[in-house]
Length: 170
Ligand SMILES: [Fe+2]
Ligand SMILES: [Fe+2]
Image (cartoon, rainbow, N blue to C red; front, side):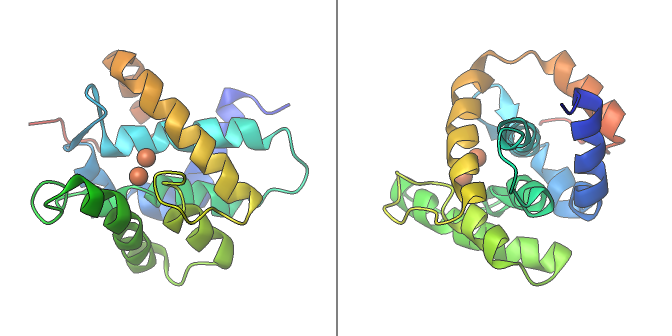
């Protein structure tokens, strides 16, 4: 069974370009789910999805990591400013997340696209068709429920272990 260290090393290895990107760094400054922010939330979702993925033999863990890290990156700077309604935010941010993910890591695989584009299911009606896409739907909702109760210091320790450059929230 993979340990927490194993999972965090996997995230660093597969997601290094994303973790070090300017947009992901910016995401630490945009609040999300009351006490969290877009990038901490994305890290929590990635870790949760990887833990669940351990129950299955055939999961594309690299694709899962990259797509989970990027699934909400389209929200950064757009929520409230470009997305003027809640409905628009729900439907448009996965599309913008996929476009930004391509800017950072290049063309996305079908699995990566499925994870990012359909992670809002069932709030959007199109369901994911890959196992990885189902995993993020569960992990994302789970994290959204517990993040309002998270302790900030545990995120700070995670940042140190992953060697992240974090801008604090305004
Ligand atoms: Fe989202
Ligand atoms: Fe999310």
